[in-house]
Length: 170
Image: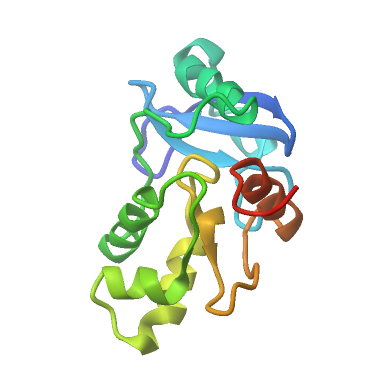
């Protein structure tokens, strides 16, 4: 059961980053996307016994992920329904606006939501709590000096995603 008491549906998807775990609600809206070993990520073991494996319900997401990793899709068109505070949702909305092939900084995200410079840490926490890796592109957020800091899925995966999108040299 999800935190709202609804049945959770899930599937897995083999990707260049490892086996991804996708969860969704009864409508097929994506509620989370996790990579193996992700800090704070979901696991199949956690879902067994109360989640329902249903690849058909999440087929649009797996199709689009396949196209993304093949270099054929630059923008996801999926219903997203993650759980988070109002502050986190504001930060995540900014992430959704960072285009494929571009990057932004934690400070720029803070500025976009009208947060002060001291709120950059809180913005970083909200980005780190993003339950929709890849689809909600937190990997496009870098440090002020261009450093590839922080990614719940691991820096190696962040490098792979940014390289795929052309933000880093091959």
